[in-house]
Image (cartoon, rainbow, N blue to C red; front, side, top):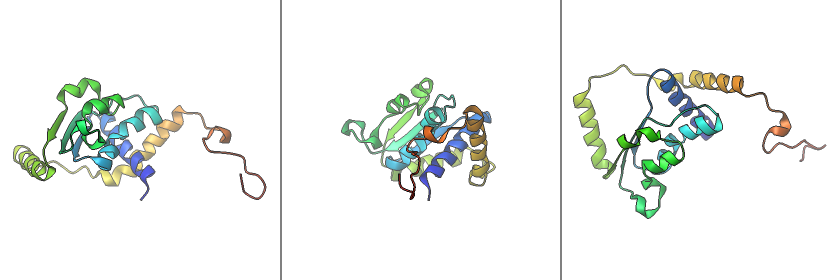
Length: 163
């Protein structure tokens, strides 16, 4: 398990979907760390990698956490806009459903399966390494190589291997 690689692979999948003419959507079942994980792809694209983007196109959340308690699990799409996680132009279409996920997910799943025909699987797990390589190539082409002293936390090694 490597969270840094996981974030970058997820970021690469989102970017590839958008570049391929598609859109990105977040469907949040609950909150907490998984919610943050999927939403952080956009700040990673925009702030860390400096790739222009506007945020996720769709936001659908099922949660029993209320925003008035101050917890991040109940944070609304409006909060996600402030971090560039959701495209502000898409905010009117964002949906938050305050309902226990054990009730919401079966209803959503039944509706989706009843209304839509099967689609070919995208098999994104098997494409993630190549998608990540594409992002790395793009970033390297945009950014000049860093000198060691420009890398945060780097310091010249003294004799004996200690800093």
